[in-house]
Image 1 (tube, one colour):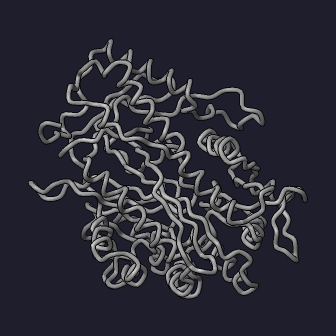
Image 2 (cartoon, rainbow, N blue to C red; image 1 turned 90 degrees about the vertical axis):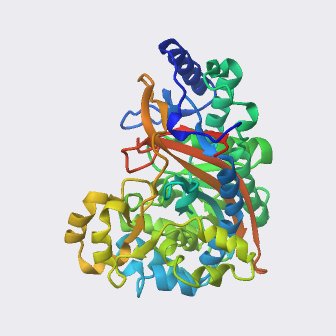
Image 3 (cartoon, one colour; image 1 turned 90 degrees about the horizontal axis):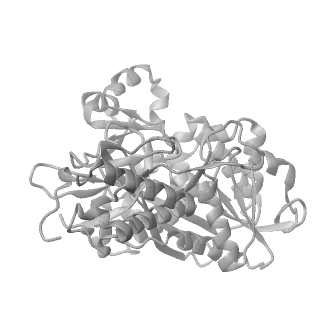
Amino acid sequence: MSSAFSFSEWPPALSEDQLEALTLYATTYALAHGLLYLSPVKPQPPIPNSAIHAPLSVFPSPFPRRLFSLARRLQSTYNILYARIATDVEFLDKVMGSVEGVGKVDDFVGQLWTGWKALRDEGTAQPLHLGLFRSDYLLHAGAPGEPLSLKQVEFNTISSSFGTLSQRTAALHRYLYASTAYYNVFPDMKPADFPPNDTTAGLVEGLAAAHAAYNFKEAKILFVVQAGERNVFDQRLLEYELLEKHSIHVIRQTFDELALSASVDPATRALSIGGTAQISTVYFRAGYTPTDYPTAAHYATRFLLERSAAIKCPSIALQLAGGKKVQQVLTQPGVLERFLGGAVPAAQIAELRGSWMGMWGLDADQGVPRARAGAAGLVLKPQREGGGNNVYKEAIPPFLDALPAPERQAWIAMELIVPPAGTGNYLVRAGSDAEKVDVVSELGIFGWALFGGQHGGVQEKEVGWLVRTKGKDSNEGGVATGFSVLDSLLLVDD
C-alpha cells in the first residue's frame, strides 16, 4: 500500500448492481466448492439431502501485515507452552482440580478432572498427546496515536473448528478478485495482499503424525462428533484429505454410538470399534461442553477412550489446559517463565506476554469489587467453549450480585479488546441479501503439537488461519451459533 490504511473507510462503496453480482459470484462459488452447512432442519435426517452455503463476507477484511506475521510467529511459542502445561500434572491439579482448583466449584471441570485423576492412578496407557490448536486474536486500538496491536481472545485446545472452510473462504475472495478485481473500487488491492491458506493439509499433517507415532498402519482415526452436526463438511474435508493424501481411514461416531461399539483390550489397552477396527488417534469434535455429557454414562464413555492406548486429540489434560482459568493464571508473575524459560528466547516470551489483555480471577483479593467498578470495559468468562457463555459490560453488576461466592473461582475477568472503529463489510447469510454492517473481525491461527513421549520433546507447527467477522454490536463470535460469518484477510500497511 502506498500510504497508511484507513480502517474506517472499509469497505469500498459498491453500486447495487455490483453488490448483487458479487453476492451471486460468492454464493455460487461457495456452493460449488464445499463451503457449506447442512440445512437447519431438526432433527437432521440420517442421510443428508440438502445443504446451504456457510455465512460469508463479500470482501476480505483488512489486517495489518506486521500483526499477521506476529500472530503466525507466536503460534509455535503457544504450541510449546500448552504442550508443557498439559504435561505439568501438579500445575493442572492446583489450577483446575477438584481439591483446590476450579473443579471444586465447576461440576463439568470437576467431572473431567476426577476421571483423569482416577485414570492416572491406574497408570497411563498412552503418554503421547496431540493438540490441534487455534489461538484467536482481535486488533486492539489503544490510546490515540498508538499503533494497532494484536491481543489474544483465547486459546482453543479442543474442537478447533473451521480450518477447512476458512481455507475455502480465502479461496473465494481470491476468486472474486481474480474474476472481477472487485470492480476496481479499491485500486490498491493486489494479489500479494491475499495470503495463502492451506489449513486443511496442515491440520491433517498433525493427525497423520499422531497416526504414524501409534505405529500400526492398519489402524484408523476416530472422529468423536455431535449428533445432528450441521458443520459436518468442515469435518468431512479433513476425513477426505486423510484418506486421499495419507491412506488413513476415519470412523465417525457419537458418544451414544461409542457406548455400544467401543472397547479397550484389558491387556494391550488397544481401542477398537465394533471389535475389529483398531484406533490410532481419537479426534474430539465433541466433548467440549456439558451438554455433550447428559448422563454419567457419557462421562464413562469419555473415560473409556482416555483409558486406551490411542492418542487423544485432546487428552483430558490438554482439554483442561485450555481452560480460561489457565489463561488468567499465565498472566501472573513468573508463571510464563516457569513453562518457557530456557525453551524459547526471552524476546519471544515478551512478545507472547504482549499479546494479553489484563486478567484476574473473581476469587482474587478485591476481584469482585474491581470487576464491578470496571464493568464497562470488561468481559467475564467461565470455563466453557463454543460461544454464548460470557457476561459483558452492563450485564456484569447484576451477574455479580447473583453469583454465589464459592463459584467465583470458576470465573475470570478480562479487559475488553477495543477494535478499530468504523470498519464495515457486506455479510451474506443463506436466503438473505448482502447486508452492510459495521463489523469486528477475529483472526485465528492454527497449529498442531505432538508431545509427551519418553523423551519429552515437542513436535509442532503453525499451519494456517481463519477469520470470523460479526456485527460490532454482537458480543459473541461463533459461526456455528449464528453470530459470525466466515471471512479472510486483505493484508494492509498501517
